[in-house]
Image (tube, rainbow, N blue to C red; front, side, top):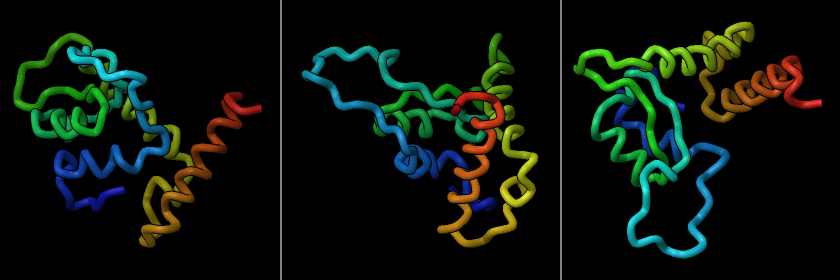
Length: 126
C-alpha cells in the first residue's frame, strides 16, 4: 500500500515485499538461472521502467508491465487489462475503491475481506 502522491516505480520493492506469497527458495544454486523461471507479477504503466524491473528482479520476481516511452507492442493491452480487471473486482466495495479508511492498519484488512468475498462469489472458494 503506497500513498497516492508516491511514485509507483520507487515503491516496487516495498509492494513486492508486502505480498503474501513469496517465491520459493531454490533447492540448489543454479549458476546460470533463466529469468523466465522467476514468478511473474503484473504492473501497470507506472512500473514499466528499467529501475522498477531491476527492483523486482532483486526481489525474486519477473515484472510484466508496459514499457514507458516506447512504441506500443502487441499484447500490451492485455497486461493493462489484467491490472484493471483486478481493480474492477474491488470496485463494488466503495470503502475499498474510494479508500475511505486512512488507517494503514485497517485498509489492507478491508481489501483482503473484499477479495475473499469476490473469490466466494465467483466460486473460487467453496
